[in-house]
Image (cartoon, rainbow, N blue to C red; front, side):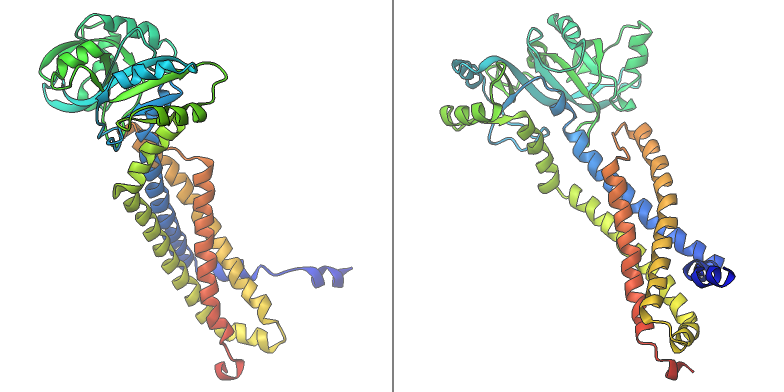
Length: 390
């Protein structure tokens, strides 16, 4: 029984090799964690960019969206004749439409009197615009000229609008040099393109932005009847309407915005490149650690080979070292990433979250980083010749 116990008892060689020099282990974990944190932050900012760019798009109460073919994104929308939206009502599947004006205007902070660009949406208060619960009641307050709804998730540079409004203080300021009164609060959220948002009636919008032609809109919302197929209806409308407009489903409109930031700007590429640099840095750190470990213990490995141990068994030892380093390095990176995400959310109002996809992806990258580096370090062991070493 005693012989059987020692026969099947395994020595944690990989663990012993890693912990033999605690300082080297700490440096390795720190390097891997740094690489992981860098990847978490870069991918977090990138995904946050894509998510915030479509915050308003997701909240729109619509099935189809009418835009100009010249429009590139929400920060560069071109106008088209409003009558194109009215023409869609000729189709039986169309239930109702909502014309929307969209542009950037200058908002004056009522406390500091500094101006800042804000994204303004203008629509008919009697129409449907957002899916937010209770929005229709707030929209009724916009029927009076000069009234606006302010996005309370906007950056603090626009002023303490929410605090003043909640405390029943009259919130009055200027937009595009004209007086407006805040009649309510909405929750939309800032994006990389817009630090804040406001909603008003088309009447007020055209007063604030008189350069916009009265018969022109930037977005047309189309609500379909029950059981209508948005994809089919969009194809029919695209064929029947003139080529100065383009009909998209809501999901296509969301992808239209994301594709702009992903493909037409350098922002997505920069964040992806930053994540790649973190991956490369981690590979270099792990490789140096494992290569030094194999090189320092080369006589011991050669002795084991001379005693009859298979090279495959020793290679698995190095591989287990890589796996342990990946595990120990990932945990600090994950918890640090959670903390940094929280700081960024509170500071910038950007919806940067640690979702399951990002968690799994970063762990997979760190694991590939460590196992790949272990594989390269193994070449030193493969080339080891016991006769030459001794």
